[in-house]
Length: 338
Image 1 (cartoon, one colour):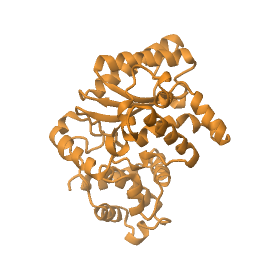
Image 2 (cartoon, rainbow, N blue to C red; image 1 turned 180 degrees about the horizontal axis):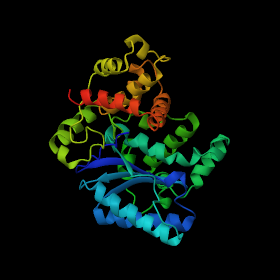
Image 3 (cartoon, rainbow, N blue to C red; image 1 turned 60 degrees about the vertical axis):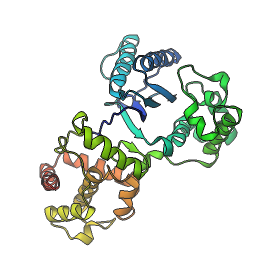
C-alpha cells in the first residue's frame, strides 16, 4: 500500500503516534516511561515544538503536537532515535523498536482538537481488562492513570510543565476552574456515552479536518511545495495526487477484469478479486479528498472495517498471484495518466 503523505508547514497541528514492532511493548516499567517523558521534553524544547496532550500505553503512545516552525520530521527523528537507543541499551536488545515509521495525521484545530484530546485521553479505559468494568471503576481507573496529560487538564496539581493546556481548554471557557470542570465532565461523558474514533474522518490517511481545511491544505501546501513532500512509494510518487472520479475507476476495473458494472458494485459481488481491487484503488485515489466512511457509502454501504479487511485480503493474494498484480498495474498505469 502507498505510504501516507508527509505534510509540514509552520503552525501545523498533528496527532502523532508510534506502535511497538510486532505489537511488542515499548515501556516495560515506570523507569522507561519517565525516561520517555524526559526525552520528549528535551526534544520539544530543542525544536520549539508544543505538546498539547499525551498518553502512554504499554505498546504505543499518542501525542498532540503543534509545530510553529514546521519541523515535525526533524523533531521526530531526534525524539524516536533517542528513545529507541535508550530502550535497546537498557534492555540489551537490537533492531527496530517501532513498527515502521511514525504516523502523523494533520489536524484541523478548530474542528477536531477538542475531540482528539478526549479520544487520546480515553485510551487507558479502552483496554480489555478495564473496558468490561462498571462505570465507577472505569472513572476511577482513568482518574488514577498517571501516564497521561488527562489529569493535568482536570486538576492543576497534576500538571506537567512541558504540556500546553490553554488551547484545548479554550474551547470550554478557558484555563480556569470552570473550564477544567467542563473538561472533566467532557471526559466522563465520553466514558458514559461512548464516542466514535475521529480518525474515521481522516482524508488521504493524513488529514483530519472539514472539507474547507482539506481544500486549503491541497491548494496552499501540496500544490506550492509538493517537492518537499515524500508523497508515496507507488508509481504516483512524483506526481501531485488528484481526485479521479469514482466512475472512472469503476470503468477501468471493469475493463481490465472483464466484469459487469452492476456485478462489481454489488456488496456481495461474484467478482471478488475485482471488487477488492476496486476498494484498494478507491482508497488510493480518493482518500486525499474523501474519508473512508464516505468512500464506503459510495461503494454500497461498506464499513471502514470491511474495507480494511478487503485490502488486507488483497495484499495476501498479491503475495502468490503475479497475474493479479499485473492487472492492478494496468489499472494504475491508465489512472495515473488521467
